[in-house]
Length: 249
Image (cartoon, rainbow, N blue to C red; front, side, top):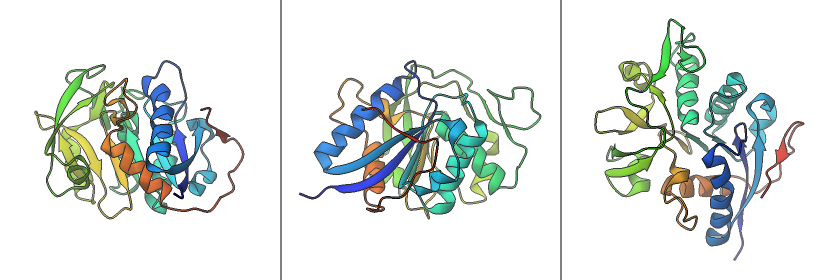
């Protein structure tokens, strides 16, 4: 059977101390074998993101914030959104996807991240009331959304490693300009965001790559769907600019 191919950028500052960084390559290798995908995987640190990021068939903004370069992370999100490149943002990726959308689309150019700019006057990303670092939590999924379609359920239990999230009082700032929040915790705090008109744009505060930790043969539906979106986008090789190195496998 022929494999579907695609070039995937894993954007994040790779570290042995970030659990998802160690787990993701194994998940992708398993998907390659099981679903006949041919994913050409590259790790790109946030401080080397440049215009070459537009040459990829998929962009995954990984956990591990604060990033070396917030600007690099924002550029990766904006490029994926504007160029119709399949995008997945998890944990810190969710947080910076919301920053990018607020600044670029919603006109809130001054919003900041509370982890990197805690004294800023206009915080969009704020400390969670209760840290979710190392915890699991229920997520209520909105029927009729991409998240609900992929999960096949209206409720899921997901794994977190984060202490910051979107200020829920600012949801309308993003909603009014097209962002859809398709998953919430039991207290009504946003946990999944998506853009319905984009080929594939999904951001989660939780880390789907950690689902079923220890069993890499069962990737989360979000990870599986993202990998298929990447592999199905373009079979052609695109030249990659300087500063981008293939991932170790």
